[in-house]
Image 1 (cartoon, rainbow, N blue to C red):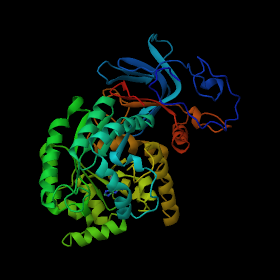
Image 2: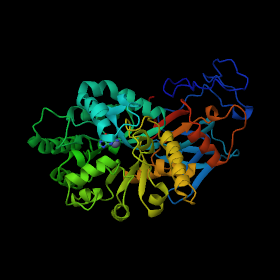
Image 3: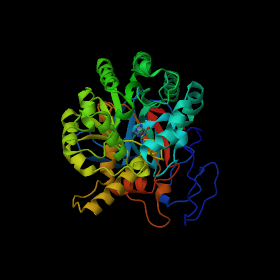
Image 4: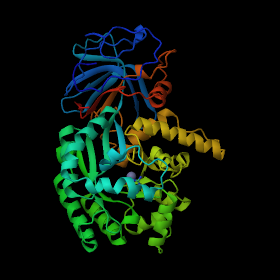
Length: 479
Ligand code: GUN
Ligand code: ZN
C-alpha cells in the first residue's frame, strides 16, 4: 500500500488469482496478488494528502458538454486552492519532477451518493423483501429514535470513512428527526472532509418522536431546520450544505410540506423527500390526500417541485408525473439496489433519461444494503437489463459510461453543483478517486484500455479495497 495509513485497505478477495504470488515487503505493498509487468506500480509511493500536487495515472471522466474523456496516461495537476489546474495527455518530453506516478490506477470523478440515511447504516442488509412501511416500523424507526448526539458522534466517523473507502466524495443525506444528532453529523463531516448536504427529518403525522406533542412537531421541526441551516449551510467554505427534509407524504401534513418548501426556497437550499417508491405507500398517500391528482401532485401543491428539489425513488411515476418532473427540473435520486431489496419495483430508467430527467444515484442505505455507488451502477444496470428483457424494450440499456455519468455529473447537477464537481475538468474542484483495476481482473485474461471495458470491470467486478484514495478539493479523505 502507499504507507500513508490513510488509503483504503488492500483487497482481501484475491484468493482465486492464478498468477504467481510475490512476497510482500517494503516495495511490494500489501496486495498479495502479482500482476503482469505492465501493471506494476511503484508501491510505497505515498498518495498526496494536500494540494498542490500532480498525479500521473489513467484518467476516465464524463465531460460536462457530453461524451467521455479517457487518457491511458494522463497528467492531472491540482492547484494549491484544491481546484484542477490541468488535465492532459502525458508528454515524455516535458520534465515534471514532482509527479506522483500511480499508474495503472484510474482517476475518476468522486462519486455522488444522492440519497442516504445516516442513522440507518447499522441496519444495512436487514429486512430483505419486506414491505416498505412494515420495514420502516421494524428496522428504521427504532434506530432513528435512538440516533441522538452520542450515538451520532460514535457512528459518524466510521460511516464517513466507509463512504470514502468506496469512492463516495459527496452525499445528500437524511439524519434523524433530532437537531442534536444532525448537528453531530455535520461536525463529523466537517472534520472528515467529505462534501455533505444533510437535513434533519421532518415528520408531523406518523413519527417515532414520542416526546414532542403532535401539535408542536411542525413548528419545532421548522425551527430546528432553520437553526441548523443558519449554522451549517455554506460551512467549511461551502463544502457543507443544509437540506430541508420532510420524510414523505405519509408522515407529513400538507401544512408541513408547504411550509418546509417555503423555508427551502427562502434559504435557497435543497428540499428532499421520497416519492412513489412502493405500491402500499402510493395507496396510503392517495387516501391521505384525496384532493391530489396523484402522488407527485401532493408535492406540487406544496410548492415542492423545482431544480432545488431531489425526490428519492420515483419508480412508479405516471406519464403526467414524469412530464411534471421534467418540466419543473426536479431531480430524482435513483436507488436501484433499495428498490430490489425492498421489492419496490424497477424504474423504467431509459424512459426517464430519454425524457430528460435530472438523475443521480443513491445507495438509500439501509433501504439498499450497500454503501458503494459502484454497487448502484451495477445493480441499476442489471435491473434495467431485466426490465428491458421482460418488456421487450429494444433500446439498449445504459452502458457503464452512461451509468458513470449519472453517478457523477448527474448527482452533481441534482445538487446544483455541476459547475463545481462531477467531472475531471480544469477549473472544477478536485473531487476525485484513484481506483486500482488490478483486483478486478479475472484470474486469466488481460487489463484493457477500452474505457467502457475498463469501467465495466470496476462496476461489475467491484472488489473491496479497489478504491485506493479519495480526495475532496484536493485533500485526501481518511478511510
Ligand atoms: N420512505 C420514507 N422514509 C423512507 C426511508 O427511510 N427509506 C426508504 N427506502 N423509503 C422511505
Ligand atoms: Zn430513503
